[in-house]
Image (cartoon, one colour):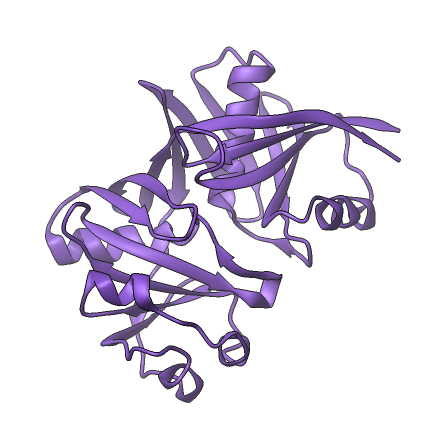
Length: 260
């Protein structure tokens, strides 16, 4: 069997920045084991697969180690492939997913994801997270899938040194770390060793927690953020009540065939 594959850098305006995702368009679903093996072979943080369903698509995401319920950058990459490579002509792409209906539109070269916002609850700091970083956070919150730690200074985020074993012991999908920033409204990083990704370059799904928090904190509905990983990426954000809009650019760096 041969399948087309696209490797696209999401939340990036030039190659080799942002977050790379593999995108595999399908006519019908492959066995889960095959999709997981393809994701492992790609060895990227996420591989997205989608199939057409009536006037929409059904999308699924796999890390090298597991299927996940929501992924922002691979959804953006999938929309980019549909719009730019597969000549999708409708103004909005609708994706059915394990997290419900997701929508992506293109506005002035920005691909805008419409995702469900995550509810945020402040919690007491878990014991293992008190010593999981070289700098102590100020607050701790729990969301849909992740824990978010808020730090005092922007420089704290760039200087953090994570203990991945202690993060694993938290038994959550991932840990978001964030702080208010000067050039941007906020900065963040994301660590998810539980799903095989020690540090994700740019994490769309994490912004379903970040946007509601910083929107309320800064009293703004539109924000501009940066994920300050080594590759880095800029995220255009909008809070809309129970939904959030997560925008970014993308570039394709590789196209090819999977043969098996």
